[in-house]
Amino acid sequence: MHKTRLALLIMLAGTLAACGESSTLKVSDGTGPSPRLPEPNKTLIPTVNIAPAIGWPDGAKPTAAPGTQVAAFAEGLDHPRWLYVLPNGDVLVAETNAPPKPDDAKGIRGWVMEKVMGRAGAGVPSPNRITLLRDADHDGVAETRTVFLENLNSPFGMTLVGNDLYVADSDKLLRFPYQPGETAIKAQGSKVVDLPGGPLNHHWTKNVVASKDGSKLYVSVGSNSNVGENGLEAEQGRAAIWEVDRASGQHRIFASGLRNPNGMAWEPQSGKLWTAVNERDEIGSDLVPDYITSVKDGGFYGWPFSYYGQHVDVRVTPQNPDLVAKAIAPDYAVGPHTASLGLTFAEGSKLPAPFSNGAFIGQHGSWNRKPHSGYKVIFVPFDAGQPKGQPVDVLTGFLDKDEKAMGRPVGVVIDQQGGLLVADDVGNKVWRVSAAK
Image (tube, rainbow, N blue to C red; front, side, top):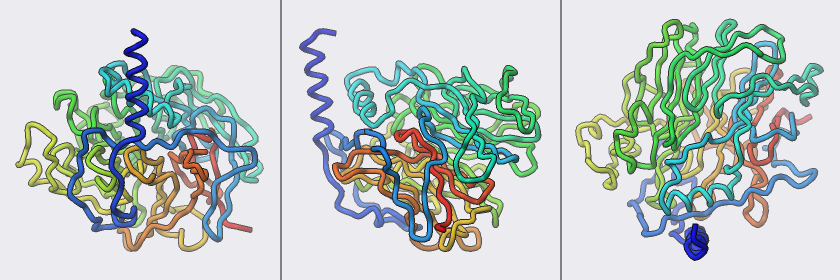
């Protein structure tokens, strides 16, 4: 690249990082069952407000909620993003990052966003492995660490049905044989079904959970753009949750219009599937709230044509008023641009009140909002299978006094001892939250 052009692009990246509008509402205004939705505020230059990733200083850790404490369950990991607890208590952690996706970085905008997002700690190569952590003496620290699966392709979600371990790579769902207690799988995985991937793979993370009877698998697939700007043909099978028949591999779209669903979990009282969804960017610091919602079979949730029900996004062409008329409003907003990824319910938790009935949510943190939002773990109380009341902070303090990211929480899960595990892909740790002694 010509030096002059390179210098201009670098200057443009710096300009983007310094420009844009600011929020006029609090994060709490965009939270709850009826969030405030101001008029869109689309600017010529989008708001870019990255918290640069710096990692944790020696001895530092997040701040735990009153009545709880936090300690490192495992350290020195390589971009840990997602967690799964096996029946014997072993913890699987997906050490992963984005796969090569050259078409996603084309053009000046793509180049700039790639550089800016790299500042947030997302620019490192993917380790492409799943690591097993074992805390045999139940002291809250994993003393055994082994490479459980390797040579994967940006793995993310994991679930076990019987002796079949399913792993959602960025472009396929794989099945591996598993024997209880083993610390590594050497067998080759078999493909269950291809998932949307390729050189344009904008939201690459794929998650998987199993139905209660184990006959079906539910796979989350994010969109290939912000609001369809790469063409709706690039969105085939995306912005959706798939239902996959475990025996045959046949699949159908279970729910659609979900821009980037990540966390999925079964709400224990109602038995309904819930998901955490990242909504769209670039129409202001106060729009659009990310959300958690129950997922209806056949439901359409708006993306890209509308947000939070039937609020039309005028940027999308062509419009689709018939689909907008069917769009379902989510159950509960969790703040604009919080990048809410992790989702697990409190079933099996031994944390004290008020953390006994509800959902824990890992908020990776904003890039398209001033001031920052997210960068913490929250708890949404539930009653009779539905959210009730305002969220409660579980872990905070991921940003330092200079607004730099010492850590960024992603996946959350309850371990066999009733503690809450949190994957931190900037701090390269798994934190464990437990009741204070």
